[in-house]
Image 1 (cartoon, rainbow, N blue to C red):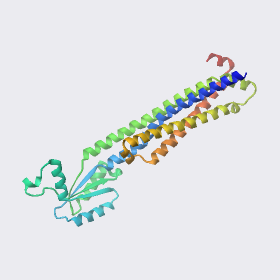
Image 2 (image 1 turned 120 degrees about the vertical axis):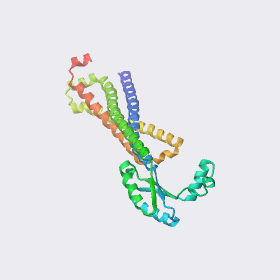
Image 3 (image 1 turned 90 degrees about the vertical axis):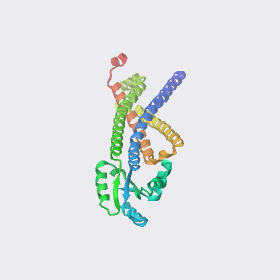
Image 4 (image 1 turned 135 degrees about the vertical axis):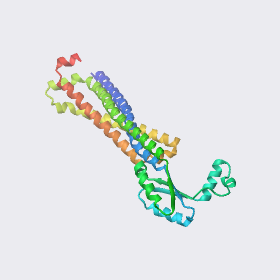
Length: 292
C-alpha cells in the first residue's frame, strides 16, 4: 500500500510539473502578444512624435523674434518640441552633408532660419496638420510651412495595419491558449476519472468533488503565470541590454499590465478549464467512463 501511494504521489507530481510547464509556455506566448499590443501604442506615438514639421521664417525675423515665436508655439496644444535652426547653422549642416559650401558659388547664404517642430502624436495626421499649417502660415514671422504629408499618411496607415494584425493575433492566440490549456487540464483530470466516480458513489456532492481539482487548477495557474512572468522579464532585460533605447517606448506601466494580464489569464483559464473538465466526468456514468 505504501509503495502504491508513493507511486501515485510521484505520478501526480509529474503531472503537476508537466501541467505547469506546458501552461507557462502558452502564457509566455500570450504575454508576448499582450506586451506587443501595449508597446505598439507607445511605438506608434514615438514614431509620430519624431516626424518633423519645418516652419520657415522670413528673412527679416531676428533671433529674439524667433525665440519669442518658439515660446508662443510651445503653448499650443499640438507642439511637443521645437528647435530653432539659424541660417548659419543650416548652412554649416548642409556644407557638412554636401562636402562643399553652397554660399561660395551662390555668393550668399541660400538658407533661411527655421523652426523644427515635433508634434504630439494625436496631431500627427493629415487633417490636423492641414489646419495647423494654415494657422502657422497666417503668422507674420512665418514664410512657409513644410512637412512630408505622404510620409505621415504611410506611417499612420502602416501603424494601423500593425495594430490590427496584433489585435487579431491576440484574439486568435487567446482561443488557441484556452484550447491547449483545456486539453492539458482535461488529461490531468482524466487520469482520476474513476476516483471522481467513486466519490459520487459514496455520496460526495459535486462541489466537494470539484474543490481539490479547482485548488490544483488555481495553484497550477499561479505557478505557471509566475514562470511565464519570469521568462518575459528575462526577455525584456536581454532586449534592454542589447538596445537601451528601447526604453523610449517601454515603461513600467506596460510591464506591470503585461504581468497582471498573464497572472489573470493563468488563473482564470486553468480554473475555468478545471471546472469544465471535472463537470464533464461528473455527468458521465460508469459505462461511459470505460468507453473514453
